[in-house]
Amino acid sequence: MLCGGDLFIKTVATKLMRPNGAWAATNAIDVVVWTDLQSNFQKTCGKPFTVEAALAHLHTLGEKEKSGAAEYVWRAPEFIKTPLRTALEAERRFSR
Image 1 (cartoon, rainbow, N blue to C red):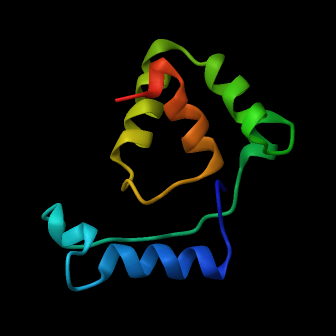
Image 2 (image 1 turned 90 degrees about the horizontal axis):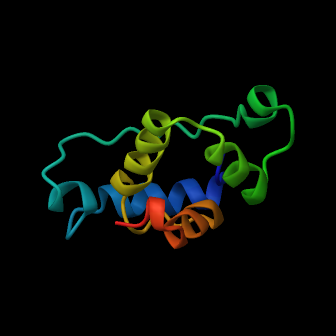
Image 3 (image 1 turned 60 degrees about the horizontal axis):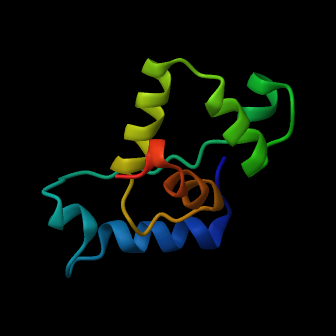
């Protein structure tokens, strides 16, 4: 989980679905689903999630997986700012 909690979810939901100038409407998207899933980083990587641990993990991925991760970051709405996204966007590989 990159971010979570009720305030974050309410903020994201408000920005995604606000009727006037909403991100979804602006991008011609009819439906937005926000799941707020729990993190599986500890289970998958064997250590607690930190930005540094996530960056290290991403650097171990193959080219196809790195490309998928970069696309995931790019496709998220601009207002979804997390410490990990900020760190990734600072890297040449993940910048647009």
